[in-house]
Length: 121
Length: 419
Image (cartoon, rainbow over all chains, first blue to last red):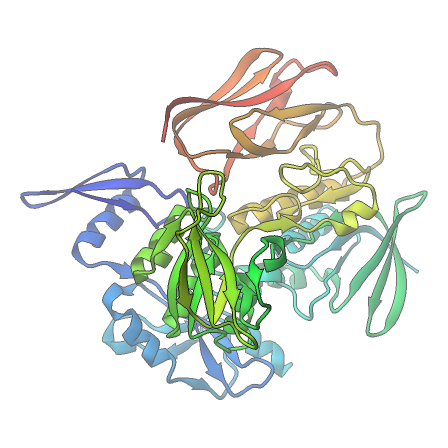
């Protein structure tokens, strides 16, 4: 049996997971998403990451970005390496794709701020 | 001289929500912000998890803030950025405020004020660490500013003192950018931050958390070179003989937040020693008529969703404000509560949708939250657990109860077992 704290919402339920013949039995969760998270933690743990990319604009040296979908936990530092090799030379808007399908993981890197748009105007 | 119905001080999430709500309720509103950009601290909170309660989405800080900034602009509400409020005074019909910015000094008047001034981090000077005064001692918020806004990593190898949420978030952030976080040290025997942040920021990255440990000394001439870590007893006093030296180039502090109420104090607003914010009624009006408080200036929130919510309450009520006689009774928070907001109920106001925020003093398992009016239990709610870092919110209809000027409202937690 494994105990873990749910990170899906701020409630932070303590859940217990037991392995059964053909799957897992989750207890302690108070919603469906909690059970899904618990099972994914046992099979293929996933996370989102939020970071910044460099820009050429002196007033805004970095722009915040995040992954558009969860990525495998063990690929976090590989994805960070990809993001840190980018330098933005043109202003982008919030939601714009900075890196498409990063490392073929099915997630894009997207801008999370309109900061560079504000510089232009 | 410009005259407004409502003057909002602070352009973070509380002030933005307050200004939008005041405007939508028909008030001529001005928002004053000292920084160049609106958004407050959310500008540098690039991590996600904002808006889960409000939008059922996991947004980053800038995304959450920009939703409100866009609405603020769409409503064409007036804002003055890079502007400081240097003085507030009561006048016959409301308030006058002295504003200072690049175009000079001006005075504006307003019938009602909303203080959305946020909170400040406790600094190294407030936690009394011995040793030299080298560079490399930062608050977590300063480290966050360097990393996320300036793009400069402030450390290669650091120790974090305090397990507040920003410290946990920065432990992960610095690790992602290639810095080594030797550990998070917490003087208390329980963590200060949200449980989910202990898991997703520390456990995920194998960053150790040491409870009942503190930093007792810093070393270094120009730049920090090492810190001394010591175990502490239940009274948080260092235990001799348990010292160890850790080499690092930075000490990052996440040792608590204090509501910012310097301007409120100049108006004689009464503060609650427990929240360190103003004593308010359910309309979020302080002890001074026409002065409202919201967000982290009112009490330190763990979720921005509740900051926005309190801004909206203050904004709507400030817009509707007309001076009337108040008939207020206290809402007393029992011993097992760390605090509760609001602290008062005005019987001359509509209290049908009173929002109560509270925190437990200790980690409690299997408990019941109760509202007792004049010795009679009128409301109860079960909680499988309560933890001080995780604020609870309830909406209560106080108009249902027989309340008079002599009534006493008591909030209590009954516990079945201690954790």
